[in-house]
Image (cartoon, rainbow, N blue to C red; front, side, top):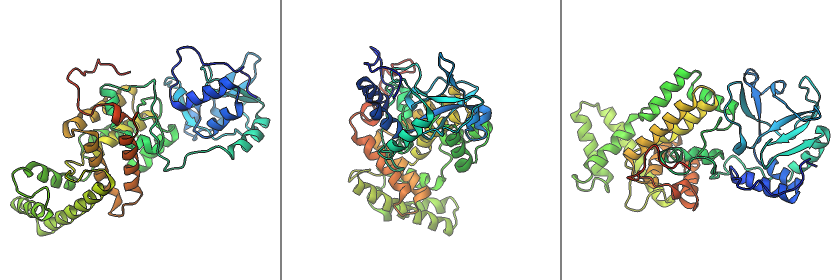
Length: 404
């Protein structure tokens, strides 16, 4: 049983996310098993000393919370209640229940969840906790890898340029089940953010991060050939009859331009095959609702802009970027997106095509589905940022506008 007495949340308190709201409701009822089932169904994080993070979350480096009686507790935090960034510690996802045999230099008595907040709960006696929590865990409904979710942080930006820019990165936030509008300490956790940069991007230093985020903002990370083809169709669409409807017209015009510019026949053939791939994807996009019957993808730059946002957040979590650098990169990605697209649907189709051409290889597999599913949620849920934030910039919107 938790120590705090049941009671209503603090007056005027805004739950950071829906998860904290549900925790507060369970606490107000005194429903501690219900509280724990919510806790066991999500990620909880503990802070680790930076030196300990190099050892991937070594438990010996957890800073402890000492109660008035002197007993030591591990502080745990839900994502919405992470603390302001501090240089000496980083957040790590911690599996529950915590092993009661852990030794941290002093006896460990229990855990305290979200200390100092309306959802705070203190759970003493780790050994009893392990037994009870292990039983409850069997009934906890933890989301799977592909259980995408639109999660809004109500204490984060929800209107204005920063909110719009963060929403440009919502595909990956939704797929990773993290708040789309957060620029808090981490995207997933310190280890995961560090690993994704290292393993998927070969980014190991701040210089690496700066170089790569600059390439994303300039739309120079993805191969140039798809963008060339899309730009030909977009640029000449109103001047060349049938260009946007007939792939044969598109292929003929591209071949003429390439040969005029001195391309080899092998290069011409490569571009012809790429046009065929784009046409197949656009046909599928129309069937899946990414495009309407008469629409086509205007640019695939969105794939770079849309990844620049989580890339900035990973850099923040890996301690390779400062909060100021991360926010600047996010805002730039949002600005570039508005320069090239007129709507969230147009942006999302460009993002999905860029991702599919790069990684799906015509299979319509996971790399396609993991963009389509977030698209459907973001376009369909009434409180999604794509339904509540205008894509085009309002005339009176500026950097000093309402971000709340």
